[in-house]
Length: 101
Image (cartoon, rainbow, N blue to C red; front, side, top):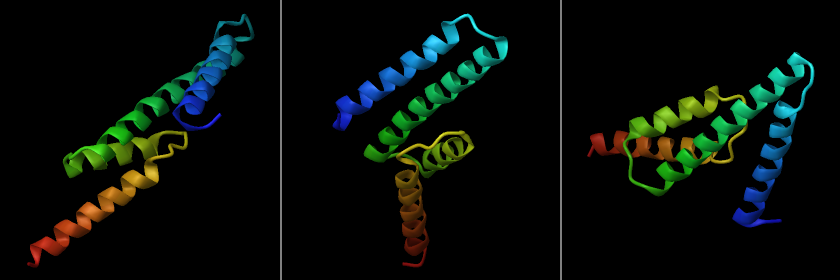
């Protein structure tokens, strides 16, 4: 599995396993853990899509800052976090340099 299809397949498998854990009649503590994992996963997927969008479009620096803040607050690792931070750093550097022209 590679590329977008592989990522989509892995997301589906993970969601299926988490969903199974949530739907299975089990101890309440186990149910809460699976629910928490699912919530973090859903938020991570949403923020990853937002990161991809802002990296491919012209957006305000405030949008980069918001996404970086949200990604850093998330208890999951997002592949595009470093790319968003890098783009924000380049934008800030460019603005600083342009003020002295």
